[in-house]
Image (cartoon, rainbow, N blue to C red; front, side, top):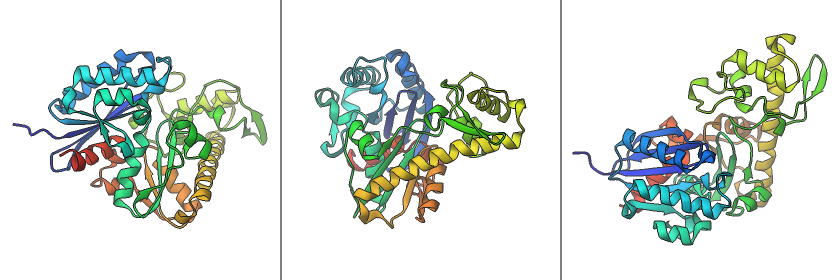
Length: 344
């Protein structure tokens, strides 16, 4: 008979990530499912049912975090937190549900509703806390599909520059740029083609996934998001979407020229993340020579930034039993492992 283990749930606005480990803390499965929560709470219910069936995890202890409360299906974040908790407890035993609240520890569902600000958008804190437990000092950087979290730590202690998303955006430790979903018009207002800088169309014709697919850094088969036009993530379609940003068509330039345009946008994103790292380090200079620890589907960006800053690079997977999927979905994996340590 299958022994109950520990599940870490990271409930986002576009994806549901779940990691499961056994009662000895060995990671067994890490999955990601599409979850278009902005369409309504029913989307989360469907994705959770699929995850529960896939992992056979209903009897496990469940550690839960979220960012999905931010979607515009909810009037405000408190409503979102409550709706997500209600959805979770309809599908999982209430006594086995634990909401991650950072320094406040693990909260029961009703406690989490009363202290909603302690659990709202705290997924980054779980990943960073686990990283700090494994590494003495550094910058933990999680670049996902939509955002980039930068968290300094030293002497195995986190040194966060704020806890709320608003505070973290002001400090540079939350950057709204990701490896898949970021519209290219958020990175630049112009791009080079045929020797001139072409003003961009102010439309969501292409995203960062198009750029990183063209540059060979993203595997199209690993992308669950739809492209801007709903067509596949092949190079030809990526070039056509990129061309629309410059108000033209892909056959108006060579493949090599579109590669250069893609590099332009990649450089703009790299600059933005590098500058944010320097902003964070200006407050926490004690981590100035420490490694950068990369997590998320966009951690290849962190590795490039580490080289620019002349820092060592550590992949989050090496802290999680060398499982790449754990690094792709770091908060879920971190929660499962933290739960195995703290909720046993």
